[in-house]
Image (cartoon, rainbow, N blue to C red):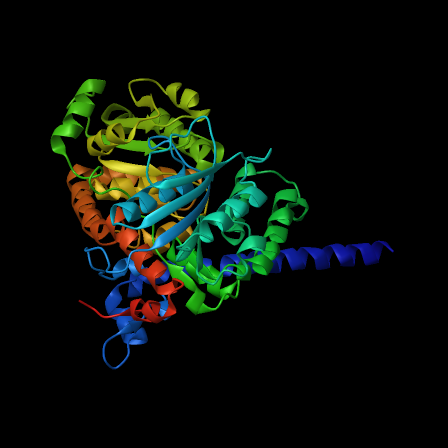
Length: 485
């Protein structure tokens, strides 16, 4: 019996090992853009017809690489958006900020927007677009029965909806399965988080059997659940190149139903401004003698990598007087690790608390390099894009979405494996390269960012997708074909 149990345990371990190996096997895919790039010239050869036009529904890479007209289209759409929460403009999480930026841009282009969302004491609703407010469930989600009735009532008016958009599972798959003119945007899927779970297990540094980890077990169940219900959504928008690949290969969604549109941020707010950066540093009393200013921004919590960042900085400040005397770290955001960063000493670390967008613009202009130590392998973090558009190089964790879509070469910044040792090496490399080298990387990053990561680019891509999948099939076909300008 003991022998049988040992054999069963070994078999179970092998099964888990194969699962994790399978999960990690896709990670090398992140590095191929460093050699081939995600540019349009390569894609055009693989998807264009003889007349030079491209079927957008079979366009396999990010639509941000394409150039759509800056003028509003001849046909204006009536769009329904389902989003769990409508954010305060200056206090938005990633998903909510995406909804805010995208749909206000579409409204400005003349489309009729109807937003189905839950009421919140922290939300402020502008007069336009049209809001359909409901009470959230006890768990904080949209009440599906209520929002569906609201949707049906509006859809039964003289003009039904041309297209429906849901941010993640704002509209549940049980309601979406019969809607052909629907697109869902994914800002994180369960398969991506397996990498994060593995990192967290390794950082725990315990002798516990990883096979017995409840988090890993639950994650695998979640992946299987998603593979089963994702096909109930007609069209899927991946916010990173890696997520698009996973949806097609692992979730087995037909390629003509998966579209990659990278996140974008407001290019009118996040842009280089030397005077704004100087004023920000001056207000903080940062001496000109400091040779390097690095910045962190976002939620200061564990899964954003701040325990790792804290430990790396603490060790460097203790062991290297040059770094300690010449580097200032600015930390913007709120969370439990803000207090701990303060413990590193005000001479080296300044914790600024949460900043509004205009203040964030000054923050990015004040720093030499932006660091994002996140351990969450999901979506594209807006802070990275904001820093890029402000002309700053990046230092970030080697996660698939980041290395596959943002830091695709050393000309844009630095990446590191999520260990204290590797993070320290990267920080020393930044100090060694110096401000002049960082400024060169920043200029290159911004040049690429203006082509891919602006709100204008993102909105134009979504607009074209919505026109393509809209209920008017006769007109939609023309919008599904792309002709290079």
